Image 1 (tube, each protein chain N blue to C red):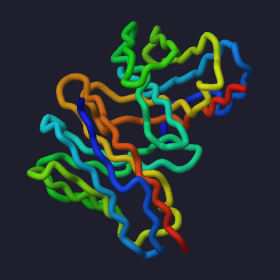
Image 2 (cartoon, rainbow over the protein chains, first blue to last red):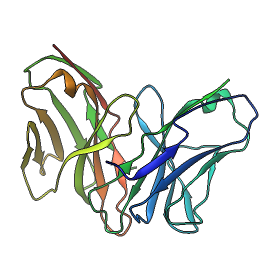
Image 3 (cartoon, rainbow over the protein chains, first blue to last red):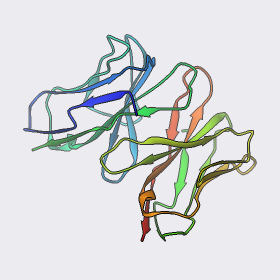
Length: 113
Length: 113
């Protein structure tokens, strides 16, 4: 059972709204990641963090922002949602030293109408 | 840019068949090669992993074959079952302090009854 939680699981929201996708992990992992995954399957890294107060942009440009104020919490925010933001957003974490790779949450399916 | 190339993009086999998914990489600094399995509506989950000093690893019906000189590795699923139908991602981990994973683009496997 993965100890990384994402809420909400599904979100349908109107264009222009501000949204925050929540991600929390109880494993004490210092590294956390956000991926965007479209129906074409490929995982695109959009943000990552190697610890508190550390955030970096990933390989895929995203209009979203992230924060890492606490080790266990890594929320993703869209200031003004657009239909192009419709996608699945996956959060993951990994421990210091790499361990056994990443643990993923179940994702948030975002639809912007 | 570090890349992991995965093929095929999709694969259909009959129950009992042995699907094979292949991955190739360029960066010889990769030190850990996990495979992830993702069911619809879920996040990817670690399935099996191998280190480059080992040529083969088996866990139940799942086997990784690793060819260090060719910089290739593959996943074999013995006696495949309809419940194995999922998307499979190979990945490779950078060494050093960040242990970042680079993912392949995924393979959608369908096992027909």
